[in-house]
Length: 160
Image 1: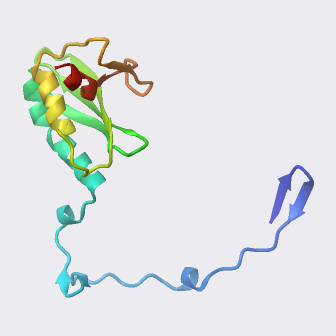
Image 2 (image 1 turned 60 degrees about the vertical axis):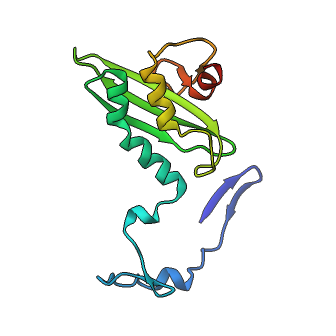
């Protein structure tokens, strides 16, 4: 293998293969895996906190549609919260007249599963049912949102 860098070309020795790369994968069995004498539960029981957050918001789409007075709603994107990142949820609504509305919501920075005063799905539903007002106090710039703005439900709750 030859590579280029500031000092010029350099020949590298081949990368040795580990024994794990040469061993074929084990065959799948129909029997459930057993850990500490307990069979694994279904997939829903194995979700981590981030996956539960995403599943909960996706399942809330019909409630979002009802609260917004829309015919239907699709949760297009969900990002779980983290210490360094705010939670976000992008929802596309289809209204009875055939128009679509694409809204992005952001929540707090916190670990998914950490105790909180409210959950993002409940907060979004409340904002939608409260008239969907767009006050500059709780609209934030969001380059990933279709219109460049997101509704900061945490700021909205703080003002109400």
